[in-house]
Image 1 (spheres, each protein chain N blue to C red):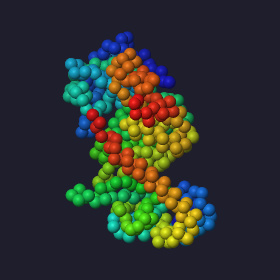
Image 2: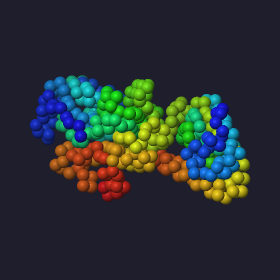
Image 3: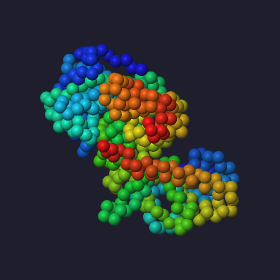
Image 4: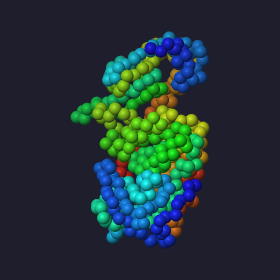
Length: 283
Length: 155
């Protein structure tokens, strides 16, 4: 597991939100935005895959994965889909406003452990946001890895998250980016089909691959199966789970996932540890 | 066109893995190499399904025209994938349009010849049906996931 640097301003009580200042709010998609926060003390260290609890004062608190580059601890970045009262309140924030932050919490993507191996990132929809820090870290330390592949599936060409960045990554000679959408008209010249169909086209050695998968749970289930079918060891497939997190530190039990608490034991899990649970409706 | 004998191309392709040299010879007898420029219509919905294609390079869009909305791409196929199964089942009519997105190469199998070959050689027929059934299962599974609208706003 990655180790975290000591935060410049240690938050000794994980239940107490620390006020951060809004630096900017950027529209990404019709219902999705990126919130950039200035940490007090000038830095906020985290590991790729971790999340924070964001508190819109007077409205409520939500768990949001960090989408920023871990090499830029001077800014805390989240990419958020506005779907409820709290996320809509966060969307309405303006530079200079204050947000409460708890964290970072949760297990990280074990990107450092994948050194020497091919790495395949598979994202669906807004699932690209929690994977972005791990992709940034892999590109920052590009010579640590074999093939670096990003597979991304979205609903339509108009709903591609980080479209410019995908293009930048794909423009590199040392990265393969394959994008597909579920549905398109003739103005789209890219792939159409589910993201699992990209796996056979991804240049990688399955026996020496670590895969990081993030998206809707059913997408992760089928992607994990496809990777396994193609020869990737389920011990080397990692997924990021989502449940209704409240406390963020394993006290309240709201995010129970069978015997696991997603906030404390996850959100990043080894596929081999949880794949059997993904087919259990009651979980 | 490739200088590699078509029997070698077929033998090396995962879709035909495990077939006997005799079966490969029969299939090669039904096959020709073809090339299409970008934007070429390979077949149109409703036309006679007289062939299937093993894509060896390029991309092909499967489209359906939705009245009032124009052509809608339901799937794209890429090198290594099989295009077309309507040659297998009556009434042998294409159910989608197929158009190349970029310059595309393929091995084209004559549908009528294939039907004759699989009827004459039951073992070959079985092997072909197993392989095309797997393609159908994979496409059905993918279509089900597409229908779920996984990335839609669940909230």
